[in-house]
Image 1 (cartoon, one colour):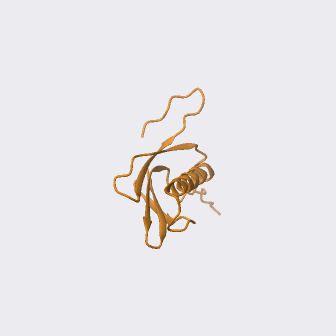
Image 2: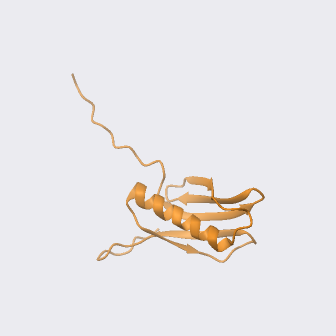
Image 3: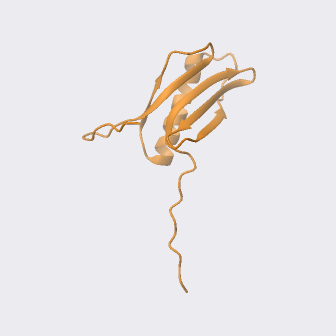
Length: 105
């Protein structure tokens, strides 16, 4: 009997490159853009009238935790000034390990 070499499964969540955060009439929505060109979207567990700083903090914590768990990478989230009221963009960058140069996106 010939055994097939077990293929390594690719994580279903790509390495994040950015966050789009917005509030809708039904609540806060965060979309994570990945380096590979994918998009992962979901709602935050916050009421519609929550403080935007709380929403940004929760979105950043979510993407940081998932990236560490799935990919074993530490990332940093940098929020930009809002382009429109109730819409924020953030850049997600990989935190360089001690002794190694930072990786460019």
